[in-house]
Image (cartoon, rainbow, N blue to C red; front, side):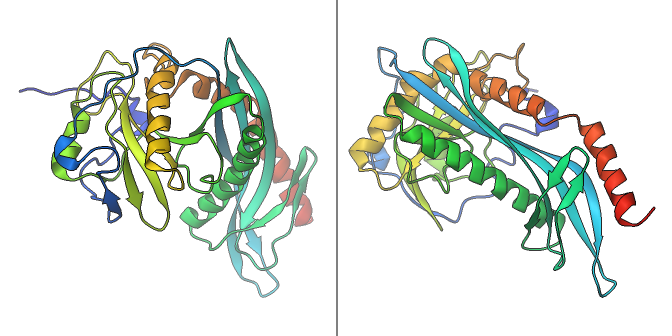
Length: 312
């Protein structure tokens, strides 16, 4: 029996989660860079591009699940969460240049208000609904706002050649010199024959650029990062850039990512999501989590605040 092992830590699922099970319903244009019959792996540029690259990412943590009693005696669920976003600039060395930490109490309860503890406040943030998924989405959306603000500030600085957003580009398509960096793959965008081509990419190679059109549009391409394990989709990432770019400009961005991103790939002995969890992003995540504060102390402070609110 022949088989291969997905190199990712099992706690993160698979780097190719449910790959091929859920074909995308988005309209895809595959002949942006090359005609469909001419698709083949594209080798990286012969020389590595230099210049500053900025990586932007965020982290979030649930400090407590809460229940809110309204004036009518109804009970509504909520989340008290801490989240942070930041940026690390890489040129001759890596440096965290921005880090912002915020907290919030997320609920759909009509009478929701700020939760104040001895360690700080959790401002009330309304969620679209009370389902756990809707509450988590509200946390994620708030964190994304902070990421966007950081990326916008970085984009105004012309000495940054490339901005890499960890995750989809959605909501940040307006930013210049910016790509979304997607590490795992839940849907299949390409026709079957082109989809199989992705698994044949050698380290450093990318696919031609194609366009994805759904409720939002973007140019995209697949890239295999340097990795010792080339089984299946190991080391494969999908990059996205704004659909407002001309085909020539999108191809230039794709070529730039193939030239730059390989040197930031992580290694298995350092990161259980190697090579996709790029070294600067992994380091930024650790720094942001450190700044979230002690979870047990915050939980204790929230329990004290809840007891005080109930008069007990």
